[in-house]
Length: 117
Image 1 (cartoon, helix red, strand yellow):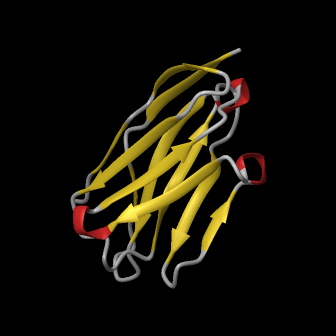
Image 2 (image 1 turned 90 degrees about the vertical axis):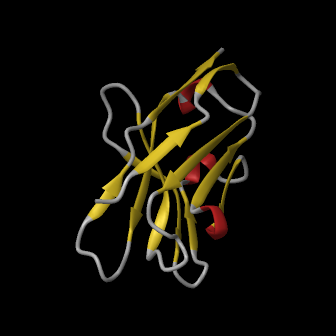
Image 3 (image 1 turned 45 degrees about the vertical axis):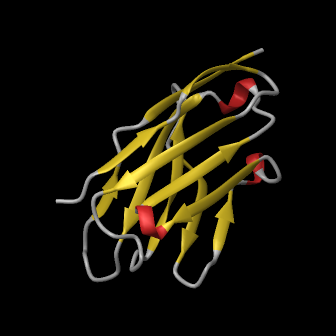
């Protein structure tokens, strides 16, 4: 069983920054895809940023230019740097990872991000 543990959420004002971290219990050197999704109240879970094997990175249009995903394979950690936060970024942020040789998809427990106007 693989565990993903997020941290770094909190309450901030609009325009401020936060950095989320997600540590995995399995090495990320061979990860197929790893990144972040979010779910706001009453809405479906949506992709925020995902980085795949080969270095391909996808960002949601709504966060382009404000959020940056990065990872440190030596620490089995993926980060989400969130700048210029807006109230509409308020959501629970979930870490996601999968490995090509493992049919399971793994999620963290989520971390709350709340942005006040």
